[in-house]
Length: 355
Length: 87
Image 1 (tube, one colour):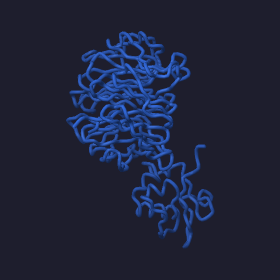
Image 2 (tube, helix red, strand yellow):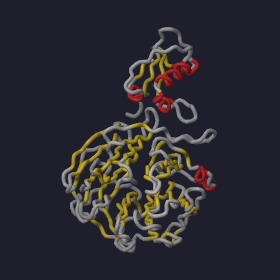
Image 3 (cartoon, one colour):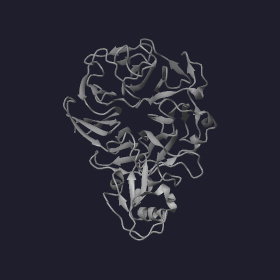
Image 4 (cartoon, rainbow over the protein chains, first blue to last red):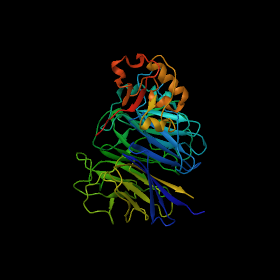
C-alpha cells in the first residue's frame, strides 16, 4: 500500500497530528491531545507502528505516553527514574528515539537532567544507562538556555552497537560497544570557538539513516559534517546568514545533503534575514536559501525538534514555528506551503510514513 | 478523597475514593493502592510529593496541619487539587 505522511506536532499546549492525503497536499488536523501540557517531542517508530510522546506536564509530573493504534489511544509508560541514592530527579523528556532495527523492542529517551534511558519493552518502562551517567566529565555539564538535557540520540545505520548522544551543555558522547563505554566525541577541525570539548552546546546531532558513520551536527554557533571514518568534525557554514540555530535534517538518500534553519543568536528568531531553510548539497561546503512560498523576511522561530523529513521520493520536509504554523515542502525544500496554522507554539515536528 | 482536575484523569476518571486512614500519608498510600496509575503522578522516583499539587483536609491546607502527618477522622474529605500555576 502507498505510504502517506502523518506529521506529529508537539506544541506548548498539547499534541496535534496532521494526516496528509496520498499526494501530501491536503491535511487534516487532529488534536490537541493532553492540552495544556507541553509536548517536547513526539515520534513514530516505523519498526512496529508505535507512537511516543514526551508529555512534560506540570500537574502530576512529566511522563512518556505510547500508542499502538496510530494515536487513537495512548497509555502512560512507567516513568524514567534516577536510581535510589541519586542526587537527581527526572524532570522531563527531551527526545525519544527508536532503537536499531536489529533490536526491535529497544527505544531510547533523553531527559533533563541530562541522562540516557533505555527501554527494552517498547517504551513500557525505562532504565538509566549508568555507563553514560558515570562519565567523569558529567560533573562539568552545565545547563544551556533551555536547561540541561540530553536531546539527540543518533543511532548508527548499520552497527547496532554504535550510537552517539548530544548534550546541552556537555558535548557529544559515542559508544561503539552498545553502551558499555563512551568517548567524548566532538573534537573538531575549523570553526571559531575554542572551548573545551565538554563545554560545547550541542543543538542537534543526526546520524544518516542509511550510511554507517555519516553524521551531521548543529552546534550553538556552528555547523559540522562528519564522514564515515573521519575522527573529527568538519566546520562548514559558508553561505549561512548566521551560525546560530537549532533545527537540522539530513537527506535520507543523498549523502551530501542536509538542511538547517538559521536563527539570530541574540533574538533567537530569523531576524533580520527572514525565515528560510538552508540546504547544502556538498557536505556543508556551501549553503543555499530555500524560501519559495515562505513569508518573505518573516522573523519566525523554529526550535531544536522543529524540522523533520519524510523518506518518500521526492523527500518531504516539514517545519513548525513559534507562531503556530507548520510548513511543508513536497519537493525537497524547493517550495513551501503552510499545512497548519493557529496552533500553539510548535516545539517539535516529526514526519511519519504510514499506510 | 476527592480528586480534582488533572488528577481525576490520572485515576481513569475517578471522582472520589472512600478509604480508611489515620493521617494524610496513609490516605495517599491507600489512594495509590486503589488507583496505581496515580503513584508516579503524586510522587517522584525518590518518594517526594510532586510540586504543583495542593492537599486540603476539608477547608484547611494540609501544609498547616502537618502535611503527610495531618491527622484524619471519620468523615473528613481530603482534596487532591492541581495547584493553580501559570497565568
